Image 1 (cartoon, rainbow, N blue to C red):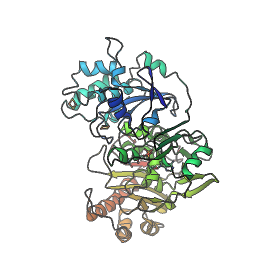
Image 2 (tube, protein in one colour):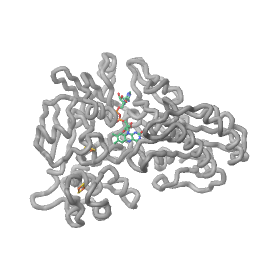
Image 3 (cartoon, rainbow, N blue to C red):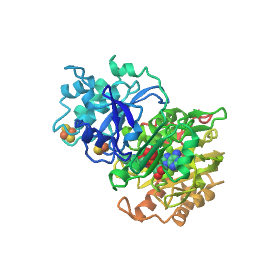
Image 4 (cartoon, rainbow, N blue to C red):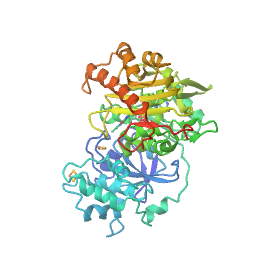
Amino acid sequence: MIRFTLNGRTVEAQASPNTTLLDYLRQDLALTGTKEGCAEGDCGACTVAMLDTEGANGPVWRAINSCLTLLPMVHGRELVTVEGLADGEGLHPAQAAVVERLASQCGYCTPGVVMSLFEACYRGDLDDEAARDDQMCGNLCRCTGYRPIKEAVAAVGGCRPKDRFAARLAESGGWQAASWERQDERWAAPTEFGPLFDAVERGARVVCGATDLGLLVTQRGQRFADLVSVEGLPGFKDLRVEDDGTAHIGAAVPLTDLEAFASDALPVVARMLRFFGSRQIKHRATLGGNLCNASPIGDMAPVLLALDAEVVLRSRGGERLLPLSEFFLDYRKTALAPGEVLAAVRVPPLANGARTAAFKVSRRREMDISAVALGARVELVDGRVSAVRLGFGGMAATPARATLLEGALVGEPWTEAAVEAVLPLLAQQFSPLSDHRGSAWYRSTVAANLVRAFVEETAEATFRALPQRPLSTVVEPAGGAK
Ligand SMILES: Cc1cc2nc3c(=O)[nH]c(=O)nc-3n(C[C@H](O)[C@H](O)[C@H](O)COP(=O)(O)OP(=O)(O)OC[C@H]3O[C@@H](n4cnc5c(N)ncnc54)[C@H](O)[C@@H]3O)c2cc1C
Ligand code: FES
Ligand code: FES
């Protein structure tokens, strides 16, 4: 039985583990306020709110895409849909803001817009326009126009009404283990490693946020016979900077929590996350899922390669550490051995004065897949390169470091002329594919230009870009990473 609270009532569901929350709401509960637009996380029409009592910064309401959420993932959770917001005749501030500013026309997107505004009401950090845009960037509206929607979020963002939803934020709670079988389909969300490895060893497919795996269900019609979630495992949501400066990121930390943490601890990671998916996606997406999906155009690998990150791989036999540069073996193939899962990512501290950058080149700035991405880091001694890392996405079958170019740069002055002299090594190492995101020529040209941009921005730079701004480079302050 999958049991959860929805709009203040307990729901007991007997559905298949491959059912999406959206389908269950609309088809089984006839709650058709929540809409289906794309069923792939792009439009936000399906947005609902979920209470997360284990957020890195305490309990939070998270706006999530119900189209990619598998029903058993909400077991033990509390959800609100657009039908549950009003208090009798009294509209919730999120609803009132839309009505008062005429922020709805055909209304198809409106329930999703309202649910993102609902989350915004209870946030304490929507203090600038960039943050408010980010809050709403997962909600497309094709007929109202965004001005009144932007006005609505500016009006209610952070208003923190003292209502029954705010009261729920005082809640503390732990993850509830779950297992559920229906016909030939099994689901488990263990809170201990024994049942995890039982499932993994019998061939269950690991899942975390399902923002990749859910697409196989909604777009390809796949049904998984055996799924095991890593979300509730001890330590998988740990997020900390250790005494020696190493950042430890549990595989199941939602990317929104990582983004908030990284804005101080790892600004270059926050910089890449600013242009990663939408807030709804990042509330469910994880670093573990991003790396294990092993997409050559996944955005987090390039920046983590630049930082010399390591992955912690865990099996019944214990843990092993592997440099991320050795994790991707071939197209969509990782070094995970049978029976192993990714438990955490570890990022060593940056050297004093190291300069880092993250670039994502896509057809539009928000909510798009990279054609090419670059994570870059350089360390200089007396103006010459002592260490350099250039991690690329979109240039090969896997995310990869430009090792030929890196090798040639060490010992050279960090000047445009010196870099230009060895830049052809990039084309010698990489022969990217042509596809609908860009031709091989385009990708090679962009990759070289990104290296040029990195040099240009860091050769003389004394500034430190804010991750929110449309600047790419993060120059670490003297004294190294905080
Ligand atoms: C609308 C939309 C926008 C997106 N935007 C971006 C973007 O801008 N950049 C980008 O890089 N990606 C993007 N993605 C892809 C996706 O959100 C990310 O790759 C995300 O990080 C996946 O995490 P997850 O927890 O949802 O993974 P899941 O879907 O749960 O899993 C992904 C894969 O990893 C495996 N897996 C998951 N966790 C583990 C683990 N701990 N150990 C072993 N195997 C594991 C699963 O078996 C599965 O094969 C987007 C997706 C959508 C739908
Ligand atoms: S239906 Fe479009 S994001 Fe879910
Ligand atoms: S009001 Fe029509 S799509 Fe937004």
